[in-house]
Amino acid sequence: MSMARQAEPAVDTPPAPGPKQTDGRTARRPPALRLLARPEVGVFLGAVAVVVFFLFAAPPVRDGSSMANILYQSSTIGIMALPVALLMIGGEFDLSSGVAVVTSALTASMLSYQLTLNVWMGVVVALAVSLGVGAFNGWMLVRTGLPSFLVTLGTFLILQGVNLAVTKLVTGNVATDDISDMDGFDQAKAIFASTFDVAGVQVKITVVWWLVFAALATWVLLRTRYGNWIFAVGGSKESARAVGVPVTFTKISLFMLVGLGAWFVGMHNLFSFNTVQSGEGVGQELIYIAAAVIGGCLLTGGYGSAIGPVFGAFMFGMVQQGIVYAGWNPDWFKAFLGVMLLGAVLINLWVQRTATRR
Image (cartoon, rainbow, N blue to C red):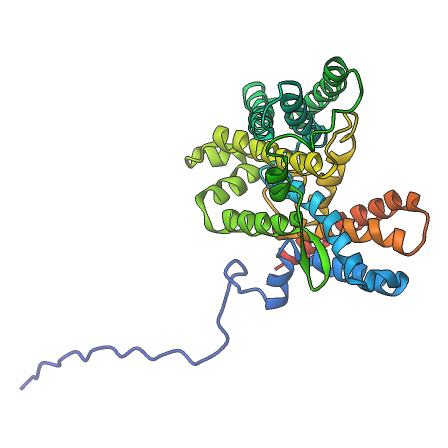
């Protein structure tokens, strides 16, 4: 008798345990490399080194009032370096940001004084002018396709000439009139240029605003859709447009953010010194850009953070004041800046290559 043989189900034998195979694309990088991939790591280490150096080279830096002064100098750079850094992450930069600060202050001062208005009217009009300058830069960029270098260089020259010519025409001088006795001055000074006491040390309000703006910029970059748009347009605007990113809006709004920063710093300068010199601001745009680059932002766009420029601005403030406290010739300040800038670019290049190495 033949018997039908029933097929037995196949039993899969689990493979012997062993190291997980990867093709290199999905391999998890070591924690040290992931840390190096952060754009602010290099500048943080540089800032620590600069602080330690001047603590020994310039003993007055150890005093609380000296550190408050260093933080103040850093904040006036850092407030502008933040929107400049966002713009650079978005793939552009603004050469008119330095003179735009002076334009904002001149507008508020002359409008209030010449028309005998409450200074808040001048502050509001100056805000509109600053945002308008930023919108003009962004609009020219997207409409013409010209590089931001050429567009903002033209704006830089226009604002520089207008600042000098209009101030002389209106006031008969190269500086605006003193507005410290006008209505609304004390209230505006409390917001833009006041000081407060911390353990017997006078600290400028700009330090607080600087840290608040840095926290806000970090949240925008890392937690909002707009932050994703900034990185996308900086990496490749064609690819960003293909996936639905509003490239025109993002570019123009980033330039307007630079205008907003110029307005705030301009108001601080006005209410700190009561008057404004029309020829100032030239060269400051390079300081803002350098602080952003030292902070880890690439000139090619698509890479950077808001925290890095905070440390970059702090390094500027520390070196600028540390040289004075050390009793050295302040003419060496620009040489130090050049060394820091080149060093930051080389460190960023090394960090980027190390972080992306398989």
